[in-house]
Length: 147
Image 1 (spheres, rainbow, N blue to C red):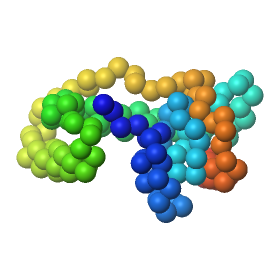
Image 2: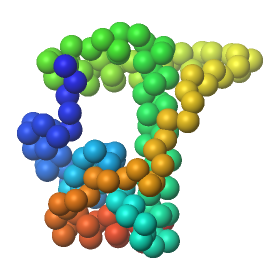
Image 3: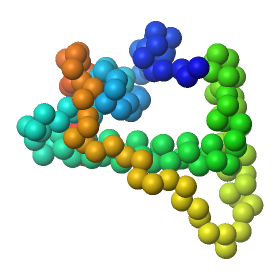
């Protein structure tokens, strides 16, 4: 059973994040102060919003690929018991430490294997900000202005 960011427990945890921190979400989630989603593309996005969506999507792709590579290397990550919330971060952290240890010991002659096609989401698929609070809109716009 997957743990969704939309659950009450995760929403409460995210609300405790400092203001300068946030989680990137896809268009299935609503925009909140600590959960940044792409702008909805209704055909009227300005250049700033398009740039934000492109940066958001490329960052999410990088994260998804990193997680995918970890899952390929450590198959146990595919079968985590999602009901054991306290154990999940420990297992993922351990796999990251082991992965970094392996990278330090690996030879540079092994070819890198790309196990993914393009995972990204086109910015035109972004539909998740229907009922955003004003402070969440302001934060997303401030970040977009810094890009």
